[in-house]
Length: 228
Image (tube, rainbow, N blue to C red):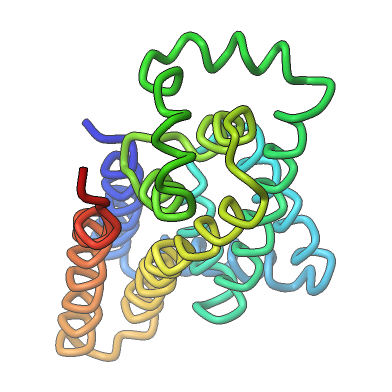
């Protein structure tokens, strides 16, 4: 299964489990989840710094999908602040990986990338297509974010095209943040008991955002495809 689809499915599985527990046990589980999120928010600026550092490490090392942190950002901080913090972390991690790929870590990274046949053959394409191929790689559901950053650093692409393509991919991150926010709204609705109409509307919003998230990669691929 595609990596990004797995991430989305995992996020919805967590949400579905939370909703099921809430329905089965009254508002107890919903209250607990919201309590955890409230404690994270209560850290204030310190929490922002911790989150940005964590997102930077995820984007740099890749021990978790970057999109999973986007879901968490939306759940904890809402759409606007969550997207801002997550974007900062993603851009810092992308910049650090690109710089490391062109510095003292280059030999080790060459060995890592060499294990992936597809990444060994894309240097000519990246030089031809520039930022458009960077964007395509960023929204691809099968390209790990950190590996892509290191591979691009080993290619002949310049900072300008690398940064432009990465920036152009941020709307996809916004969708994950929105999914996280909508998920928390659903849990909140279960706790406060506003009625099934509200829950249905939230569910419709989740479904619409999920569909858009799954579709965006195909649309971008079609838009940036270069003839020949």
